[in-house]
Length: 503
Length: 117
Image (cartoon, rainbow over all chains, first blue to last red; front, side, top):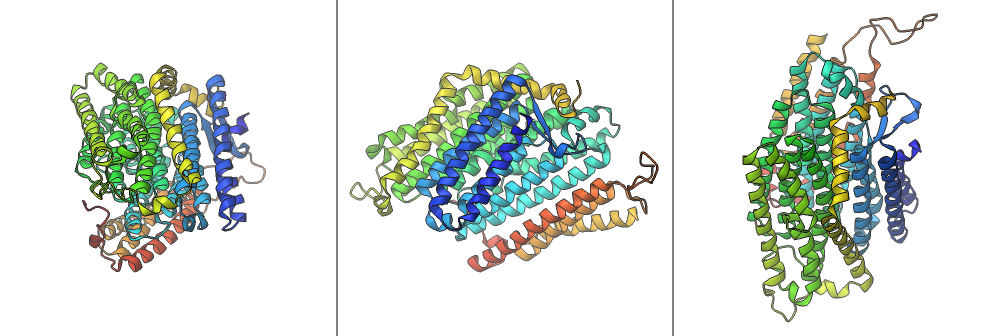
């Protein structure tokens, strides 16, 4: 049973390798990718059931006992992230069938997608900090290639910024790993959680924790380290944008949550307050940045940043309820944000542009698409009864309990401004008359798209919208789950015992 | 030895930081490579330098006797060098391709993705 936890890492690799044997046979690639994503989804759900019923599962790879070997650990947080990753992987696999161009498919788009998922799953499941670095690099190199694949000018310009800042953050991460090993003599997360309270060099430890905060902060796009995100996320094809928007920054958020609940809690007065300030500024700058934009995908990109602020806020408040809120927020956000990018891709196919000035009148001809946009958009803004309302509600309630009224005020204001942004998109894209006139309101290329491709575009949108509604209307089990996951993080003894095999 | 390595690490970090702040693509690339090397040397030094004492258990003995060189930092660096090599190779090709497509190596002129339209 323990062996099962390594499958979310191995399966994508196996499928990617199989695809390489069918060089440039894109039909084969498409279906292997779809089948592979589905298998990963099933396996991850099986692991989730096992973790819920039996508690934390850990695997010592190669039989080398922790803390000497590499541990793969599936606790509630890791496992739910793996499930969501598989879910988004599957939705993107469907959506790619409808939107990806053959040129990119020929140049190994699908194998890269699987390798990206492997890196993400590895980062979620590993229990060793250096191994986390390795998975980050696997994820980054796949994302570099996916971002630059196609080689258009804006893609390359975006990729330059993305690559430079991420390599910088990797160098900082590596330095932090080195210093931490020098102080603690171990890199196993459970072993660190056990040893850190007894270490003497607390000041140096705080410096190391800040190095980790900066390294993960770049990946999570928190203030003031987010500038690569709005410069690059709107440049690749929309399927790539969507999976990046959903998953990549959340790996950084996951790493922050893991490090600042399980490992570095020796000086919360300093580290978590720093996170709190950063969270408030992340929310605010993100949403104000979005207000200035006039491009569908750029507005959504800035909203990723502002939503990351809420998750970091939950972490920074550091109470069981707040962390449960942060986890709930991550789950909700991944689904909603990916879905919004999917919708923007459909609008682009219909109207031929992402620029709000050039498009309009979608609601007149496609009212149902308007509905499909409104579900994730209102959820993002936090309108009840959709999932975003509960996510914001829990984080804000936790903030009120700890009496951080100022930050709560900012969180509420940002919610309002998010609604403003979503209304702006609604007005410009759906309600306003098409500036090109109603005669030729459809883009020329849209008429060439087969019905099969259209279905493939819409299916994942409906699928993710349904999940949003289910989480919204039936929030209690999801919240209870997030609560359990948060308790597991705050009381790290179960984690330590499971990995180090102590009773 | 420690002092010399600390000096080199400091130099690499300083030079790397200076270079990534330049506008030229090639200099930024060198800056990134320097920062990667600096981090590798940092792990090497901070894992404690022990001269001429490989971590082998002598014949007949059961455990290692102090002082011995810790092999783990070197294993970490080896992995980091391999990963760094791959990523830097990719970055070099990406930067070259960007130079060909955009027609300049001045980062200040690559703002089209940040402009408001």
